[in-house]
Figure 1 (cartoon, rainbow, N blue to C red):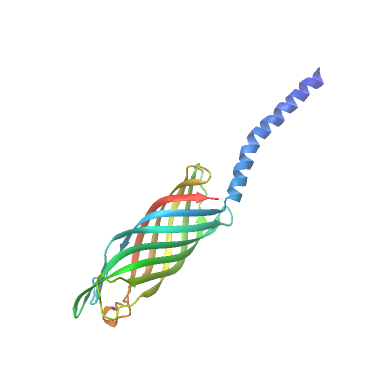
Figure 2: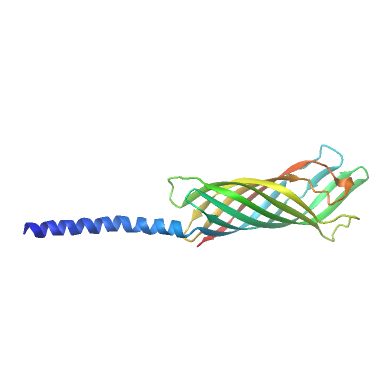
Length: 209
């Protein structure tokens, strides 16, 4: 009789342990296995004006698309690659008068990502830092003789958070800042020889796998 009671208690304890441990083990396995993430975000692009000299530059505000792929090496660190696109107009004031160039803007960047540990369920904040290239490709809307496609190197920094809706899908909110040299499209009269800053807030969705 006593042995039966002991056995029942032991069995009950084993069931209780499995009930508690199994979900945690599954969650840990998912966290380890789901290292890849694809994100699709809508962005706003706001460039700091450089109007304190001649030539001066002012870029119009625009909206765009940002697509990314990230890989998480561990719970704390990962890496991310992004491609972004928008179209805006670069307005210049030169000694010869005003000039405007509409350009397709391509953003290709890579960054290291540090994940910040917090005790909030389904909330995963992070910070990032890296670099990349920005490509300014003039359209046919405004024709400036001699203007050509130009690539500028850029430093990128930022941060944001992933909000898990399910284990594989959620919402991402992010802010990115890019520092780069003002484009001159290969024209000496448009050369400011000055760095500027682009603010790029974004929100969208992500898929983990």
